[in-house]
Length: 178
Image 1 (cartoon, rainbow, N blue to C red):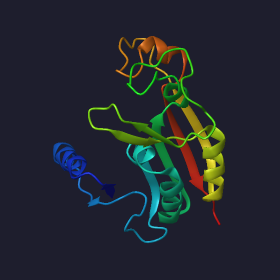
Image 2: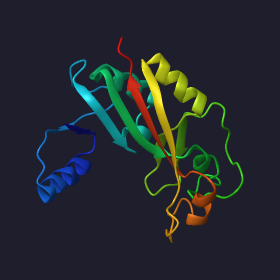
Image 3: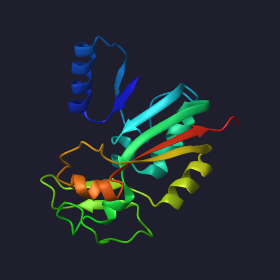
Image 4: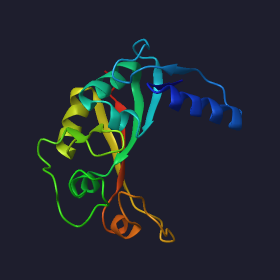
């Protein structure tokens, strides 16, 4: 089962399903309030998606609600240091200076994007407290770095930057048995 609020993303998902011979339901909806019954799934994953576009104080408890006991949630998001080192609001590449506060991090607005946007990010302690409050146990935090043969980064960070600091991170959490 896949869920996304964007009809464009669902269209891409249907194209990938056709390309790779996959078939499963795709639902237009919000990860902060899904239409699924309690304890419907054993596994949930977000590659960015809900992990940055939805308020974690809403989507993490919702993920806990729809996962069965011992169900796993895995999500990929920006590395915290990468977010803190983007100069100003211009989405310029990260540098080696802190440009925003760590404490109180939650909602980041990017008014200078081609289409102004909002992302949600938390500090590590806030993530852990939210996971615990939602009935999750942290299995792992994987801080990604480029392979040795990588030659390019993104508009947000250079490959050299990402060799020094984690530009992306993967959280793995498991819903407790009770």
